[in-house]
Image (cartoon, rainbow, N blue to C red; front, side, top):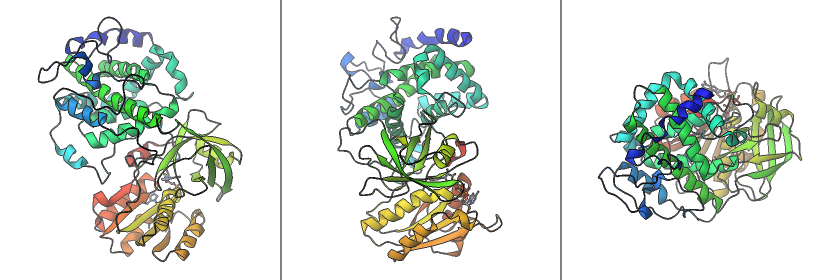
Length: 499
Ligand SMILES: NC(=O)C1=CN([C@@H]2O[C@H](COP(=O)(O)OP(=O)(O)OC[C@H]3O[C@@H](n4cnc5c(N)ncnc54)[C@H](O)[C@@H]3O)[C@@H](O)[C@H]2O)C=CC1
C-alpha cells in the first residue's frame, strides 16, 4: 500500500507540458488548466477547450451540446460522443450485443462487440490505427502477461488513494477484480472504432448510475489506471505514451459521463422489483416473475443486471424471458450454478414479497421488425429465456415471418420451458419449435440445424453457454448465414462469468 502511494505521487505531472495533465494547483490530470495543443498546433480559447480532456459533470454543461473541438483523431472521436442525442423521450434502446448470465459482471464489465450488424465496425477495424491507439496497444501488449498484478495494484491504488470509493464495490472483490480494469483496457484498445465504442461506453455510463458513480469519480479512477499501467509497462512507458492514455481515458470517461447525464433525464438509476411468483421448474432452475416499482421500458431479447438483498452490490445479468407485457411484469429464468451466490439465492431463497434491484436494460439481440426475413433461434438451457421473449415479440407485431426455434438441453427434464413454447407453436402457424436433447454428449444443439434448412435468408439468434455460441456460429456460417446476420450476446463475457 505504501508502495502504491509513493508510485502515485511520482508521475502525476509528467505530461503537463502537452496539456494533458493538471498543473501544480492540484486540479488533477484530467482537469487541465491549459488548453491542450492539437496535432495541428491550433490553440482554442478557454471556452472551446477540448472536451475530452476535461470530463464534465452534469452540472457543468449540457451533454447534448455539440462540442467545438480541435483537429485530429481525438477530435473526431469526441465529436461523435458529444453529438449524441440526449433528452429523447423514454424509449428502450438496444445496446451493443453483450450479456452474461448467472455470473457477475460489474462496473466496466461489458466487452466491446463488433457484431452489431448495423455498425460499420468492419471498416473501422481495417482503418490504420491512430497514433494514440498504437501507443495504447503497445502498453496493453506489455502488461498482458502480468495482468493480474496490474489489476491488484490498480485496486490497491484506488482504495488507498480514494477510500470513499471502496463502498461502491462488493465486500468480496474476487469476482470484481478483473472487471473494471479489463473493461477500461478493452475500451482503450478499441478507441479508433468510434461507433461501436461509443455505443459500448454509453451503455457502460448508463449502467454505472446504479453503482452511484458520479462524474468526479472518473479522474480518481483514471489516475489509478495510469499509476498501475506506468508501473507495469515500464519498457514502453514515456511521456508520449502517458499523454496517449490520458487522452484515451478522458475520451472514454467523457462519453460515459455524458451518457449517464442524458439517461438521468429519462430513467432512474435503478428499479426496485418485487418478486410476485417463484416457480421451481427443476431442482436447480426457477422462473421468477417480478413487478418493478415504476415502468421498465425494454425490448425483447435484451437483458438487465439484477442485485438481490442477500448479496448487496453484487450484480448478475439475466435476460428478460418475456416480451414487454401489458401488466408491466418481468420474468427471468435462473439456474443455480455451483458456488453461484446470486443464482443460488434466487433459485433457493427468493420468495414472493422479496425485493430485488434492477439496472437498466441492455443488449442488441433484438428483432428488426422492418424485415420479413425468417428467424432461426437457438436456445441452450436457460439461454432459451430471450428466445422466448423474441418469439412473443414477433407474435405481437403480427408480421407472419417464419420462426424456427431449436431448444437444446442435456436431458428431457431440463427442457423446463418446452410446454410454454409448444403452446406458442399451437397458436402461431409460423412458429416451429424443435426440442433437442443431447445424445450421449455427442449430438448437441448446433448440430441439429444441419438436418434442417435451407437457412440462407434467415436472421439467426443464439443464446446459451459460450461453447454453444461458438459452435453455433460455426454451424450457422456453414449453413450459409453471413456473420452480420448472426446475433448473440458476448462470448467473452460468458467465458469470464463465474457467478
Ligand atoms: N438465464 C438467462 O437469462 C440466460 C442464460 N444464458 C446462458 O445460458 C447458459 C445456460 O446454461 P445451462 O442451462 O446450464 O445450459 P447447458 O450447459 O445445460 O447447455 C444447454 C445446451 O446447450 C448445448 N451446448 C452446451 N455446451 C455446448 C458446446 N460446448 N457445444 C455445443 N453445444 C453446447 C447443448 O445442446 C446443451 O444441452 C449459461 O451459460 C447462461 O449464462 C444466456 C442467455 C440468457
